[in-house]
Length: 141
Image 1 (cartoon, helix red, strand yellow):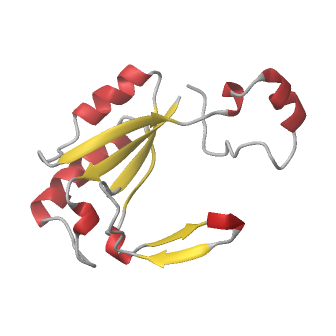
Image 2 (image 1 turned 90 degrees about the vertical axis):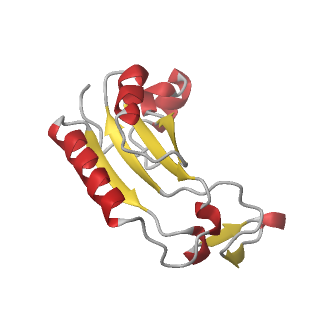
Image 3 (image 1 turned 120 degrees about the vertical axis):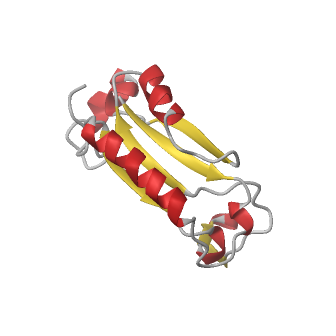
């Protein structure tokens, strides 16, 4: 089972362009990331620049509309993510609990939709087509 662990730092939605975590926080996170890698559960991870450096594309009225950050209506912002592959939701939770997060950070855990999660009829219809979800990064669990 693949899970995405989403890091949501409180206040990041208002961070200035180029805002970076402290050296100590980065060092602690690198140690945690290495433990995920050593356990063989880490598929990928990335940190994200603040929303003030981002862009949103919305589709009101069926046409794309581009808005540069910061985004006044944002209540939370994604600071980074880990994609892990574990045997269960409980195991994903255990990994999240080990993160050296600060008191102002939240980790949201979301299971990735796999092709097998879709109804059998849809699987048969999409089997072997370009519409099939990309499962290139999956491995047997």
